[in-house]
Length: 281
Image 1 (cartoon, rainbow, N blue to C red):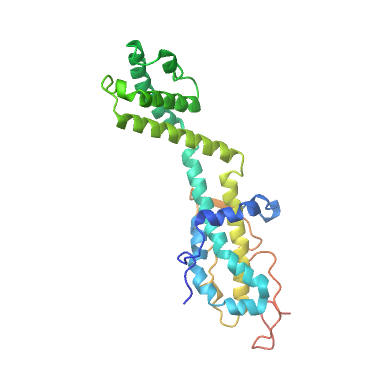
Image 2 (image 1 turned 180 degrees about the horizontal axis):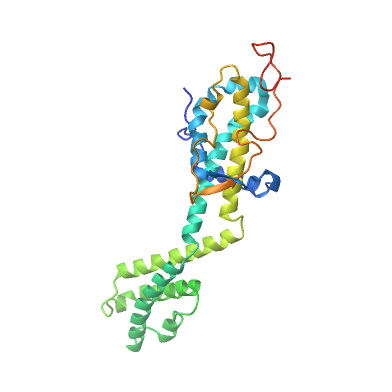
């Protein structure tokens, strides 16, 4: 029995799968991006991944009829499905960190705690006032985080002299430092993301690629299983039982929901009934 691609030791991670497709997705021409019919990204990818073991059982028949091009679609399908899952994850993460106001407010409170103590120590000549002043808060998320790290660093540098003169503990410094560093990390990630394809557009393109790739596979399965009439059992439609109105839905628009516009060219093989079949004339 074929190994499930999501459990195979050589299967790429979700991130690796998407990274391998980023350039392709960023260059995807507009006519190949489906933007009207709705699909849930995670559900659609799940349907495909769940179908892979059944599809794999017909690989030899597909390769015999459609050659290397047909086999290539089968090889690419698990990567595209996993890339779609990761694109969905990245959009969710992007939404979660799009507003950093709460995180910045928390860091500002922590800054107030350590800066007030540092000022008190400077008044007692235990810390250099000029160095404390470099950590005075100013406007902006990044400067608040940086100022906080300046004060924490100053405390660490003089800890042996001030540890018995302040209610702060090493655990306090560790906590404050981690919060400030995390805020800087989120700011960096958000700024990096602004120079790349927006997460929502990336997911739309990923699911568009999934629809077209899976559509080609479904057409090939239909061809090789025409007389058995079980193609929909092997590779079910992505539109079967779809949910509507979900927050995670994206827009896709195939010409025909069950098949992509242009199939690969089969090698004609007579069918059992007068040579007729789904791709023969």
